[in-house]
Image 1: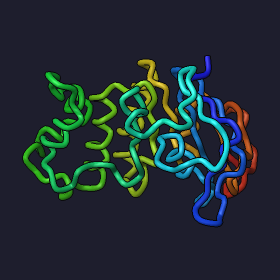
Image 2: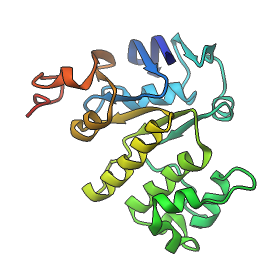
Image 3: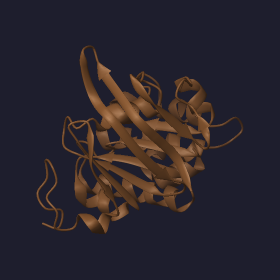
Image 4: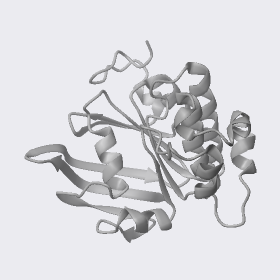
Length: 229
């Protein structure tokens, strides 16, 4: 069953078109990896799905409905959550206050603190003073607390140590196994291919590959060495 379907998506900035007619199908309850080198259009595509960038052409269908014209807030209320590359937290607020914003009324943030125990020791600390890894853990807590139907993750490993990256990806894998539909944008292959059910590779604003991770082994893709290397 297809949860999210993109058809002939075209997006640009000013006079420059960045996405040139993207078609993409995201299966329900699966983890779909969206890969590609810098400048391929990955973040632009994710922002368009979340409603943060207007389309120049094409349609977005989610859960059987056309959401092409839906506002970002309407998409969020319907169960779509975007975790952007630059954390997406409120840096001037404390960790506790950030968690309270993410927490549905009457619910305690135990699930987030169980996943990221270090946050329990930082509850009174200003979020902007956390390390990069801790900020990303706090941002990921939003997904744990809101239980989204569709989770969009934009390079959550960016600038982080391998140990922290593995911890974050373990949480993503758990969410996918629990039935959350996940679209994971990544520049790096190894962890994304380990987790993904379906892979799309973008190059220069177009789909260069679509298929299962095993089909990428030994292939040379734009901006990458062979995936099995």
